[in-house]
Structure formats: structure tokens, C-alpha cells
Image 1: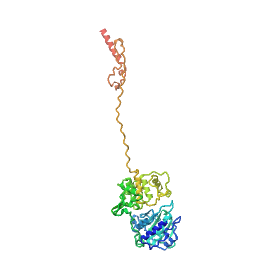
Image 2 (image 1 turned 60 degrees about the vertical axis):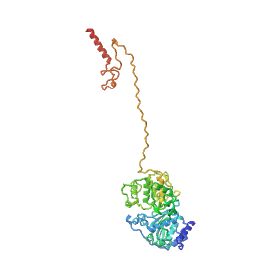
Image 3 (image 1 turned 90 degrees about the vertical axis):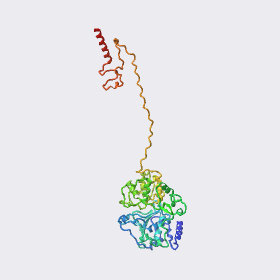
Image 4 (image 1 turned 120 degrees about the horizontal axis):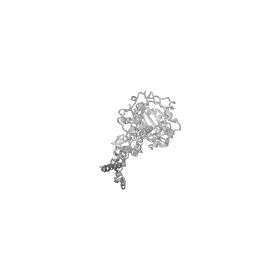
Length: 487
């Protein structure tokens, strides 16, 4: 903690803030339980007042701003660059206020941020998150911070001194992220923090030296050299799954630390799974003309995404780890898990998806038995998820059926020659009585088809009448001899 404080003071000095007394309480160790504001911080913040700018009534998508406003975006980059305990920051989301559904959420105006802090087990990490919250309320007027929620506690700058903070009892305890809101003036960069000695760094994060003009960089992008996800990012490029986020000094960038939106997440997954994305019914009203529209319609047709409201996809909202887990499980039809892998998602509607993803070896979570489902997903995290599923060739509902293995044809076998019937030795003909010769046993059956005579003749030398042919011949000769004697 001391090292962080020293680094913070040094950074402010470099920014020309040496005349600003930021107060040592910014780095005071937090206490267990909800956000407990230190007395020195409370004294500084209590003396400041900022009027509250509401978001207005909910009128649907037409009332939303479309993106983060300039001042909100600059504060986001500043916090990411200077508070290492922050794992990600979400922002714009066109939706209703969860506490009062007749009103628009300030997220829909582009004036709100969700600052994610990794959990400590299943509880808020106050030592990490309190530091950020304390700094924000100490500089309420300079920045234009009107509202902060953190770990079951809230601070409203428009309340009177001594009554600015109280217990927060909303639907989410905010134990894994701070919710902060800026005034309209701050979001338009018109407060002292944006124009005075505490001016933040440039709106773009500091890029590595490999993106400078005239320097070499490792393919495929200049801003991921040495990044923990560099191999995954290069895999996406080499397999045609990403084209980066633009260029700087003529060099391609991937923007690994930028937050991935819901639309970007669906496009990544659609490409990785070779999802057919054309010819599907229009599923949503808030993505017309959006770069992800076809992918979102395909994902809806295949049951990968249900949307965030009545015919709403919220394509520009930040994607969370739970969202991405759900999209991947549905796309690749991952089987049920055999056990519970995480402790921080008990009772969550996404718990089953988290466990399936872990069982398949796609994720090991964000800590010991932690998944951090509400944490926003960066493009680097997205690259890691997509690389793991794509490299395994997992089947999808639209994958072509595998071709059956070829059947080995057997060599034709010549039909066996029928064995010749044994010849029947009739033996010597018996001597005839009276010198009349007796025909052989096969008399009357000399034709080849005799045994199949349709008239019903049978084998054995018998006529149709059933009398032996030899008897008729003998009678004929006997009649002839009698005629000669009497003739």
C-alpha cells in the first residue's frame, strides 16, 4: 500500500499537481465490512457540494446517448492507468434505472461508470476498493462526481453536510464494483479537474514503445507485445477471427485492455463457430445498421442470445464475464458440470454456465474458486476465451455432420460352381419275361426340364396316369405276337 501511495504522489507531481494536497487518507487502509469512510476523508468530502443531474424519464432507446461522453471516457482511462487494483471499467448501457423503472439509468446518458474490483473470497476487497472510492469523494467538486455506491454504502454529493452517506439497500450490493455518476458539466469536460492543474492524461491510454513510429514490433499488432494474451491475440489474427481496432503510426492495434461490448463478443463467437449469420429474421430494434446486426440476428435465431429487454440486444453495452460464459455455453453446447467450481456465484442465474465453462477447461476463473461474473470483459480476455474454444474444434448446432468413414469394398467372389450330381448306376437291366426288354429307370424323363413339367409329372419314370411305361410296351408286343399266330 505504501508503494502505491509513493507512486501516486510521484505521478501527480509529473502531471503538475504538486500544489494540490491530495491528502494521505486516499491510501488509508480500509476496515472490514461495508465501505467505512475515514474521518479525514469525510471531513474533506463533507465540505463539498455538487448538484445532482438526473437522467430523465425512460422513453426507450431514443432517449439514450449512444456512448460514453468525453469527460466520462477520460476519467475511465485515468482510473485504469493510475489504480492498479481496478480490473476493468464498464460504462454506457441504454436501460431503465433498476431502482425506479420509470426513469432512465444514468448509464444511458453516458455519464456513469462501473469500476470493478476483484473480490476477496466472496466479499468486497475494501483495502482495494475503498481507496478508489475515498479519492473520488475527496475530489467531488473538482471532478464533478455526484454519486458513488460501493460495498453496500452510498455517497450523494447533493445532500447537506453530515448527511451525505448512508447504507445502500438497492438490488445489487455493489461488492464487486463501484458505481459512480458525473454531472453534465463534468461529462462535458467543463469542471476544474479537466481544465486545471489536475488535468488527466490524454484520452487514449499510453501505448507501448513498439507502437512508436520507426520501431519494430512483433506481428500481428503493435500494442500487444509482451502482453499476457499476445499468443491468443495472434491466434485470432492468423485464423481470420479479428482485424484489430485500428492503426497508430501506420501500425495495426488490437486494443487489448479496451472493454469488449456485447456486440463485439457476439461477432467474435460467431466467427469462431462459423455461425451462419445471413437470412435470419430481424430480432432486435436497437441494432439497425450496427456492425454486429447480422451476427446478433443469427445468435438470436440459434438461441445464443435472448437480448437485454423487449427486442433489445444492447450491442454497445459492456459484456460481462457471465454474459460471455452464457454465450459460449449455448454456442458450443457444453455439457453439464459434475461439480461446483466457484464460490462467488451461488444462487446466480449464470452459475450453471460458469461451471460448464470451467468443466470444459475454457476458464479457471479469476482467483481461487472465484469467477467474477459481474466483471467486464476486456478484448484480451475475449481473445483468450475464443482461442480456447476455436482451437478445440468444438461442435455447434450448425456444424455440418461429419462425413462417415469410407466403406472398404470387398473383392468380388466368383460364385461357386455347383457340384455335379452323382451319376446313378442303374446296374444291369433285368432280363425280361418272355424276351420283352424292360426300359431303363429314366425312360420318359429324357428332357432336361422333365422334372419341372407343369403338368405335374413326377420323377421316377411314371406317366401322368401313374402307370409304369414299361407295362404298356410289354402289352403292345404281346398283342402283336398273338395276331401273328392267329393271322
